[in-house]
Length: 159
Image (tube, rainbow, N blue to C red; front, side, top):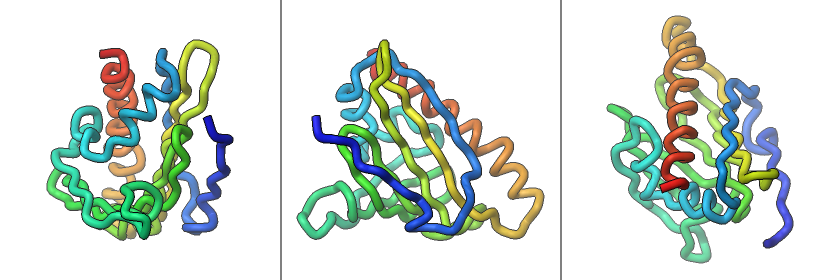
């Protein structure tokens, strides 16, 4: 296994950390990474993602750091760029501004721990101006999606 690289979201965005969810999965890091790194497979464990299309490979022709994808998230089409890729330790992505948030960076980090893998998903963003939508996004919708996704990921790895 290669040594883990450091990811600093502040090199990409000035947005503060808004959400962090963690799940311990009883499987080796390589097994968890195989599922997390499968862009198209996200539809099998990520709530509200119904379709993922890889739209642009990186300069090396790979779908890792520097590639772009589109994710159908409920009614929204999210345009994402993979801004950090460190197999099997995780990756970060940036979502182009959308109606709920701006300056978004999401980071899914995997760490080997006794008994399995610790998965930490952190979201950095600036909320957009609508107070009611900000409250729903930060306190209801996004935390719910993140928690369910990590539980689904754990089940998928165990299957």
